[in-house]
Image (cartoon, rainbow, N blue to C red; front, side, top):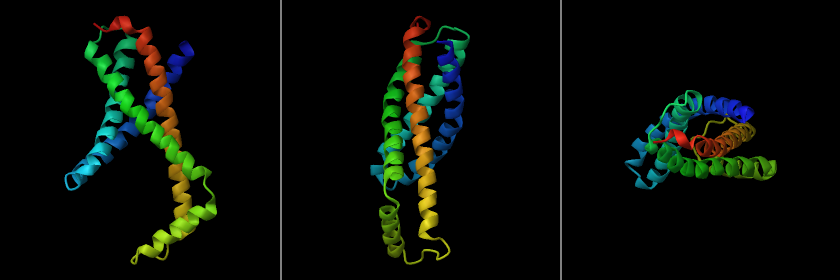
Length: 167
């Protein structure tokens, strides 16, 4: 279990900058969602991931490492936001895998179609450049999703193990 705890600590510290970035993106998306309320679902899911990351960090620092008594509401916050985060991380993994497993010719065809629909698109940016950026983002999505899902799995195990800390 000690190795899981070290892995959990590393994964937590990996997720913190990701959560900060997604929190910034979420703030911008919230402003955009005021004009298009359909985007509020995405705002909610991203906010759940950010909240999950920081409440699980609090659980790690105050509960697991120092074994302080924690409020039962913290456990509820972790569980509820973890469920929404499972959805987000699964989407990240599926989106990353779908792009990475797709044929380059098919992706290039779609990129060319999108470029032709954009009349003011800069000619300096080629379809190959966009394809490389798309692949890079897909790798990042796959890594973030995998790290998030693994972190959530370990969190649930630790919540069960350290359940006595919640009053």
